[in-house]
Amino acid sequence: MTPEEIADRLEAAAHRIGPVIHRHMQHVGELGRAQIRGHASGRPGPNVITGDYRNSWQVVNHRLPYGAQCTIGTDRPQGRRLEFGFVGADSLGRVYNQPPFPHVELSLPAITAALRMGMKSAVEEILR
Image 1 (cartoon, rainbow, N blue to C red):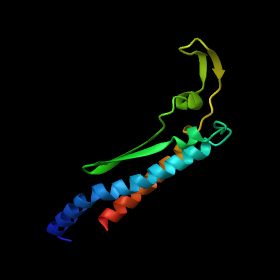
Image 2 (cartoon, rainbow, N blue to C red):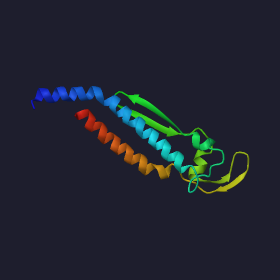
Image 3 (cartoon, rainbow, N blue to C red):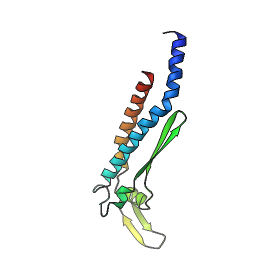
Image 4 (cartoon, rainbow, N blue to C red):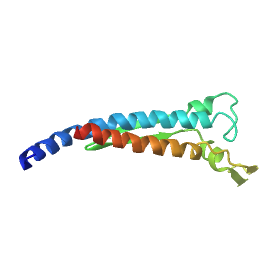
């Protein structure tokens, strides 16, 4: 392969990298949300009473010039307390000794593996 051919190939890859990574990040985000929701469906995670908390987990994807960003989160105030526990008085003076019910931490190995595989697949797709 000549230097010009290599340069052309890298130029073409530079134009495809953003959309390809964005597509793979969308997949990772959905998989991550499913993992978190699954772990938030009973012990060792929180028990499900109505399903409102579990269903509050959302994915937000952003395109970047040469990549993508994915945020998985909840807007429910009990999220941190359920994940990490809470010992002490709240702002109303009520005292709690709530143990943690991890559900995000349990999901991280699967999310990490999916992210690694997704980025590997994206690089292979771009350089084909």
